[in-house]
Structure formats: C-alpha cells, structure tokens
Length: 181
Image (cartoon, rainbow, N blue to C red; front, side):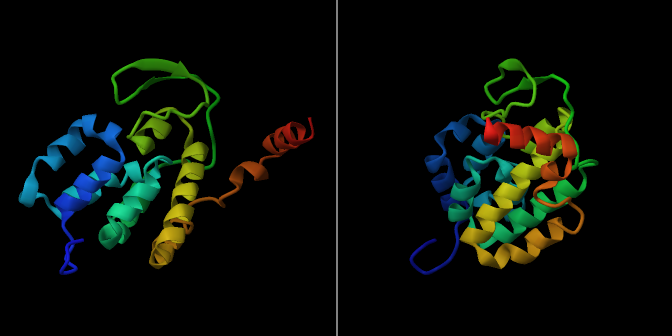
C-alpha cells in the first residue's frame, strides 16, 4: 500500500515476487510484472488463483494481496468447483513437468516446483491430495484474513470434509500403523 492507503497492483506483485524470487522465471508472472500501470486486477487474480493452493505461496500471497484476497480465493474456489473428483487419489505413476521444464516420474509424492497446482493434481488423478492442499491453503488464508471465511465455506458446500482420507477404512488403518510403529 502507498502512504495514502491506496493499493497498487504493480507494487504488490513486485513485493510478492521479491518474497518468492523463484516465481520470477514463470513466464505468465514475468510478463505481468513488466506491464507496469496497465496491469489489471483481473489479470492478477487469474494468474494467482491456482498458485494460491501451493503451500509455499499462500502466506506470502495473502500478505501482499490482502485488498484483493477475496477475489483470489473466490477464483480458486471457482477453479476447484470444476474438478470432478476431490475424494479419490489414483495410485498410478505420472510424468510431471515442473516450472523448470524438467520431467520426473512420480507416484503420490508432492511436487514442490510446479505452480499450476490444480492442473498438476487433476492431471495426475490426485484429487484428494488437491483437496487437502486446498484445505490447508484455506485454513492459512482464514487465519490471516478472517473476512475470507464466507468464501472458504462456499468451497466446503461442494467439497468433501477436510479429513476425507480418514473416512476411507484402508487409509485409516495405514495411518494407525504408522503412528504406532
């Protein structure tokens, strides 16, 4: 924010990229940062909505874009509404392409360098893991900005409970075995 209290999208984006320098190499964010005063709120919201779910970027994003946080979260909820299954995970291995262009074969491990979170998890058939990441991001966002509670509750109108994995008998027994072994 500037001294007079107005919000500058360009300043907020520059601040966010300074806090998360590895995002500077993302072409979409790089082109946004070069727009200057012609940068629009819609462009920023659309570019950040999917990135909001990434565990490394939720908190810095909420700090830098607080005045438009509701729009970012609402857009993320809208994108998640399009996901067909947030209740199940596939056990299949998938080929993952990270932001650096490198490919790797993974099972159900997390991919730290992919910023297209929703697309990555949907493509790999890991809807439940996506739901868990979304739940974590929403929890962090509401803690930092309680006014987002209504937007988050809209997500849970169509999404499964946050602890869906525990409702699956096989997974519950695996968790219990891990805890007591």
